[in-house]
Length: 417
Image 1 (spheres, rainbow, N blue to C red):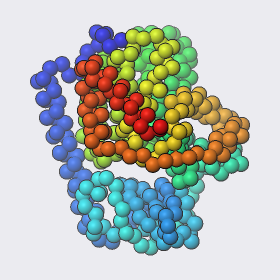
Image 2: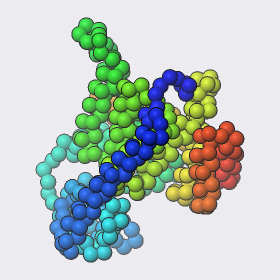
Image 3: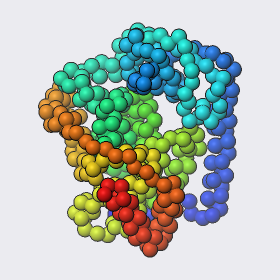
Image 4: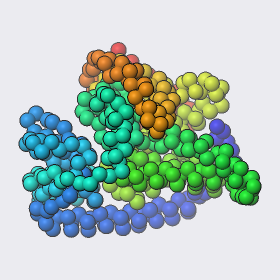
């Protein structure tokens, strides 16, 4: 991929940048004001009744933590017991106490005290029916849980989450831009040949690739709506649509300015996402992909394929361990797992569509039975700050880029040796 093409920049001069940033500031003020009015309305009633979907429930010491989603926000609460056998995806009626929730907590997602939690018997939904069909294809409950997460974004339990963290593959289990990319690739080639015939015979004047991307995005949007706008997938979809817009207008896709503009647009229109760790991790991921391509895109393509995931793993390592302080030797192979998952995911999707989802379960069980030894890691906030500043300087300075290599290689050796 060549960085020296004749594509246009999205914003051409300082005047356009100033106008753009001022416009974003006005829109941000409007949107944050709307959120504040919602918050004030929410706070008007000290004890209010909500109907919420259970995103996850897990035990902690002698009580249970519930992650709940209403039509307006996501929050956490606790319950002394689980005699009602409340499970993920159940619907509950709950009274929550709003007195101790400030505006910042409201935006970030808050914990609050609650009472009168009652499980509601609801009618079966399409998602619940598909979930049951997925589960029927497996004899192992944990494997059923894994594929319900991969296809329907149903949260996994703590034991499986810990296993994924130990192997450094949490990013593969939670639906995100990675999965959106795989799905868009599959859909693109499913539509390619049928639409090629239609295009040649009826619409030869249209942009063939652009039409395919639009068609693919329509189906992806339908999937997003079906999953009730999963935040991590929604962010990826916004970036995907923006990328199509840039492509259509011959504007540089692989550009750090474009990435910055994308981030600003997401935060301005959805202010809550400024507190989303997964958003920032995905932005960091794209940033280091761009950095890799900037300096290595001229190299042999086979060599690039081999080192790409390894390089991204190493580059992201200092940032990941700033937030997740669990290490395991299995995490060293995270890049290999990512490459393998790119093949595994579409195969399993196809097998589940034809009712043969359990065909590879014996191999997954081998993975589940692997015992890992974990250790705690410590990453200084000063090192992370230095690393981020060095990463930004690497955009312009090749010397900073090579110093970045010494930094992430040294950090990885420090963590794992």
